[in-house]
Image 1: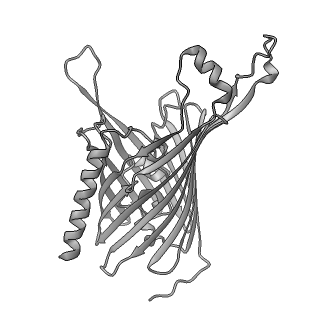
Image 2 (image 1 turned 45 degrees about the horizontal axis):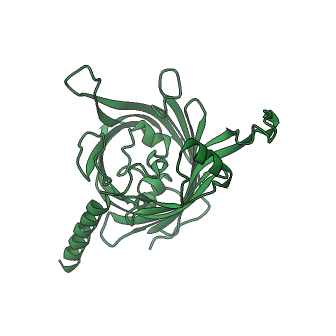
Image 3 (image 1 turned 180 degrees about the horizontal axis):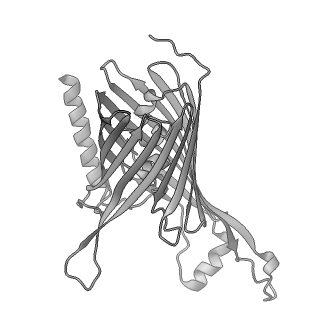
Amino acid sequence: MKHLSLTVILFVFLLLSISGVAQTAPKYSNEFMSIGVGARAFAMGNANVASVTDETSVYWNPAALTQLGYPITIGLMHAEYFAGLAQYDFGVLAFKLDDKSAFGISLIRFGVDNIPNTTELIDSDGNIRFDRITAFSVADYNVSLSYARDLEIEGLSVGANVKIIRRVAGDFAEAWGFGIDISGLFVKNNWKVGVMVRDITTTFNSWTFHTEELEEVFELTGNVVPQNSTEITLPKIILGGSYYQAIYGKFGGLAELNLNVSTDGKRNVLITGDPFSIDPHLGLEFDYNQLIFLRGGIGNIQQEDKGYQRDLNYTMQPNIGLGIKYKRIKVDYALTDLGNVSAAGYSHIFSLSYSINKIKLEDK
């Protein structure tokens, strides 16, 4: 009871701290870290915190790393935004340390490359010189170190991420950031309950601007020369529950519901508030013998005001996908609205993972 009371006090203190900071902290900081990873998760509407069991646990719920089926797993994902203008990539190496603990290291990159730099287009004589055009990239990076361990309570595991964030805008600006996530997972028969608290310490990005070459342009256009600054990402709490049921013969089905609780003020989601807003996500997965998977999900539920109508309409983002898991190889595909890439407004996302079974874990 003493430990439970202390936990409750710390949780209340965290909520009060968040409520105070949310009044001044900006929304949508480090939003590239909210996109998600893994085609399975995208297909299920990003409802993945409770049921995830693969290498993408490093992002969704590091506590689930203890459920890896093989000692070592390598995973890759690629997606594109805006007709290929922006690239979104994810890579992970996850491995079990023993039968009770696991570790993972992952990399996320979201970037736009080959952006023309025309600051030197006109030379000192007023001539247009296309040969002086160079290119630069604007990219966001995240490296995460993840750890998970089973506790003495049967079915309960905990995990954490240590995140290092690097953001660059050519030679004009750069930032370094640091943050911590914590998570938990409880498994009981066919039920799973997961919780993920992202940026529990708040994540700080320290920006440095290199605008020496642009100071004259800023002055001529009446803009303020940006100064070095700090950007804060407030915590986000994700609660998830899933249930698996055998349907008939070798067929089975899984359903998961996630509630994403943001703490940075009022957002345009299903349940709005200040500073807390709740964004629900629902996913379904049907399988045949844990070999072939059919998935679907909805998320991004918002109110839409068309202006000429008095009533607000609700919109949502549907997603579908397929998966194949054969021995140590897993291939997942998702058709989802990721940046309105195609003419129909949907994107194709692929994930691939391969597991290595060279280590025999001894039972303890």
